[in-house]
Length: 177
Image 1 (cartoon, helix red, strand yellow):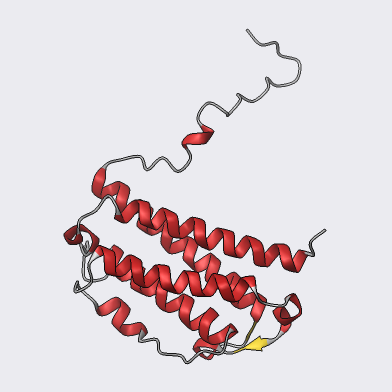
Image 2 (image 1 turned 120 degrees about the vertical axis):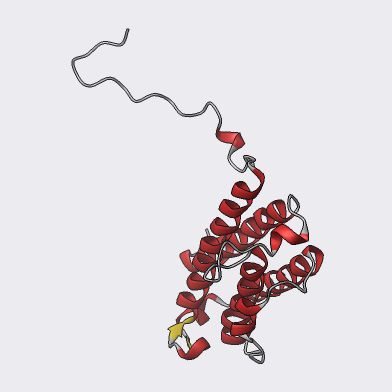
């Protein structure tokens, strides 16, 4: 039986890949102009979120956990107003996520308690991984929401659950019609 530490690492890899596939599904429905559309100066385009996610994964996992150089330019992720095609964004994000997944797949569970310092935060490796997965999920949700708003489509991520919800039982003492 796998340890809880190993289960955490395996789930983290599985979740990052699942979320990445949902981002692919979203971007496949949008042309480059919609990927870079901003509602206002204070909002981010889907393209910004993709750059931001790749930067965060690289900084926390590849740099923080794996010790690679920190080459992130965080402000540039939000300042971009285009200049990256859908294919380039996905390639950049795919590369970051797959490299991070390989790091996590080979990470000895006993290293989860080591202290890392990405973005000037002290965190355990476990906390860093949890941060990345949670952060990735949050922004994937924003990308899904924006894609639904732009296309008016149901993206079908939960289609397999259709018809599986059972009505709640009647309150005690009441019969069903």
